[in-house]
Image 1 (cartoon, one colour):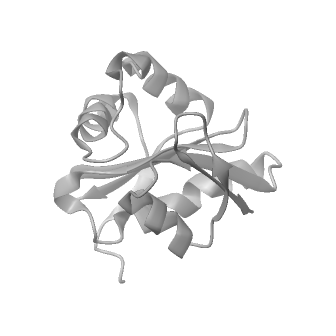
Image 2 (tube, one colour; image 1 turned 45 degrees about the vertical axis):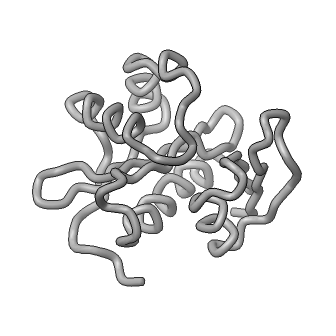
Length: 143
């Protein structure tokens, strides 16, 4: 799959409403309680680690972020109208580089079992490491 025309850049506070809209628009891995990820949490990630966005024609179409405190992927979401174009694949590497820079050698994440995200991570070489208590698949990958 070829990467669409656009650019990856760091998110700023002005991007928060768009990031929240993308996160609430997803069809899979839907938040059971959207209040658990308020605007303030997104701002904290912008300050702590940074959030990467895919921008195309002046519009943010997806974003990624990792948590450097625990070596996990915190977010990788693409606006459903723009899925399947390689945006997620372009957003994951810069986020993983953030973990490498602070010394992590392995990354972990959880995602909904049977989802497109599960298939995405398996194709990308992630290894299943069991099932979380909520039924999500736990993945790990060496950096």
